[in-house]
Image 1 (cartoon, one colour):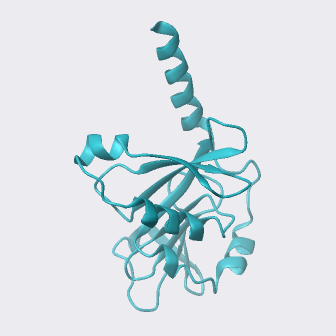
Image 2: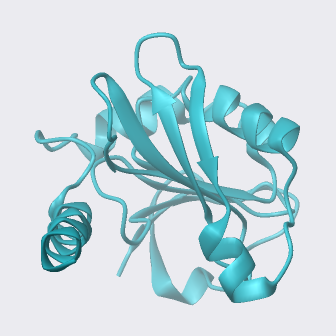
Length: 167
């Protein structure tokens, strides 16, 4: 029993420490690369890569609706084939008591997400895009939609064009 708890705690600790990329991306190159990218396939979604998976060549992703009140789905994805190995809804059921995304919706979100070399992507209903290229904590870049500014725009300062950087 103690060994299982130790393994579990070690896993949690590794998840907390691990970020997406070891190298830092230059923000200007990220902006240039994604300035005209269509993120509409991730509308009202939040996805981030959290850690290496339990099996070789897999990673763990957290998938949620944008600003969802429930915990995210924990998805293990094969890094080579981009196929889902496992979807865990344990956190979802614990926090909300019921599922809020179907397997097909999770697959569609991850199919779009893996097209980008970013750690964290969140897209609200108005098309505002939040990005963190290197870490899975807070988004550091915001690409403001022309249709509607986000309610949290005060957390960001204008950087260039329709891009904002976290203050």
